[in-house]
Image (cartoon, rainbow, N blue to C red; front, side):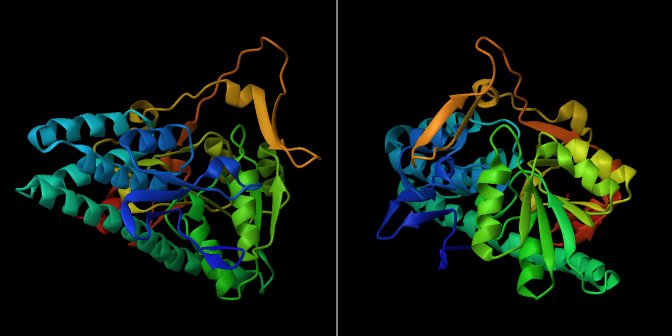
Length: 367
């Protein structure tokens, strides 16, 4: 997507030096645009764990390039042992997003097919680039399939703007390009269909206000920032036509784990007969589980993220301030699980399906 009119992806090999991977350090957005170099496995682990990068698809792509860095650093005489140690380091960074393990496992399997260390290293770079390209292409296809839903709503409204609510950032900043939940929005905007997006702020990391609002603004998509607890009120008063969110892990039965607060939006949508869609590439499916509430691991992060907030001061400086009483403890669950029964449909790169195992497997019979 575009930043000040220039196309960027969220992750890429440094021109002329593929041993270095470059990312947009998202901690500084929207006030600072900073490109960061990653070259060691520890660099990649810190970037994932400390949310220099975030979002299911981008975490997976970052892990893919991290495994290439691991292959470059692994000594020839202990290559496999070093590779597996690096894989464990990356896997330990964040537990909920399925794309992380999917990318690491894909790299390990691909390198296992090669017989020499140099061939393994070359294959790791190829696969890292394939993961990134595939992520971007799948998100583009999600946009194509989701466009039909928005087009139908627009026709029913006689061409008046379609009001779409989203939660957190499942935009291009969460993937390599296009995004998942935002891909249909961008496709509709580019097709000339009037849309307006209600952007949840998404406490405590504020991915909605910091990231989603910023990227929608860069693309010229009309949007309004709202506190997290406003969505239900808007739905009660007919001000939301459609909810589209992303997911970090989806069971084979259609339960989804997404940023904390998604479940409450799904309940409000269900109560007000507002269509609730989840957009995802297939790399986000966890084919080994069915019960999301019981089986999906939920990340718990530092309570400092709840007690403090960072922003731009009137003097143009970035500052972090305490917003709770001294000594107050916080609980910081990163995700919640929305049961499939509350979901109207899943928008994937292969098409739209009900959030049911039979519908999902009809699109993905290989599983």
